[in-house]
Figure 1 (cartoon, rainbow, N blue to C red):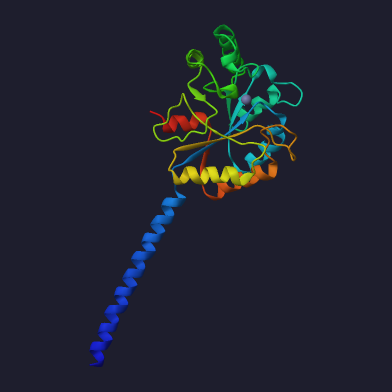
Figure 2 (figure 1 turned 90 degrees about the vertical axis):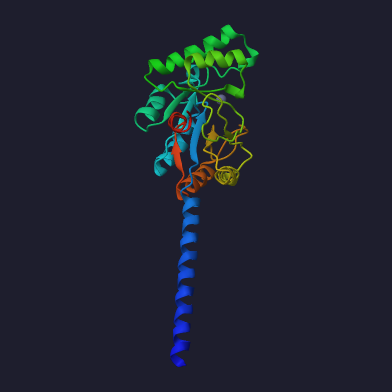
Length: 254
Ligand SMILES: [Zn+2]
């Protein structure tokens, strides 16, 4: 009698142990899926503000991330802006991508096609003459006419708009969107956007920054270095891969 009870008890214990192992396996598989997600992150810096070099670069280096540096080449070297030596250093030393943004940050739909061609082509030529990447273009102020899109595509392979689009594989490299970091935001706004994107299984999230002053100066797109660090920490601790736009579209488009 005692033996039967013991053996029943043993069978029950073994069954419990097996169920426990199965549960542990299921949980570990699920958490792996969550950690090893396939959402890539691109970080873009627009409009050559000097604080990109002074305040964002050291943080990017700390986490080993690279960015796409979107510049208006006619404004390089102006007061408070990056100079050519810094732009070249960001690409040749730190591995960033450089991208076009027209010579003078023109609002494309407000100018004619001849002027647009000049602004787009001369900017592209300046990148090429400095030996910099010239595959990606970001629309200044986010807009262009259909004909101007065609002009841009005579020179560039990738176009970033200003709309916060969801990108799924295969992504359209000629109509990319981005999350614009506004001066009114804090780190949590960008982090929430990333979490939403990962939950939606978006293939790519592009985060767009402009300026990195300690305190907001009235400029509409400042991110304090403290907030920027929190965003980079979140990306780092969640093991999300950061790529330049050029690298991301090569992986994610047909
Ligand atoms: Zn811009």
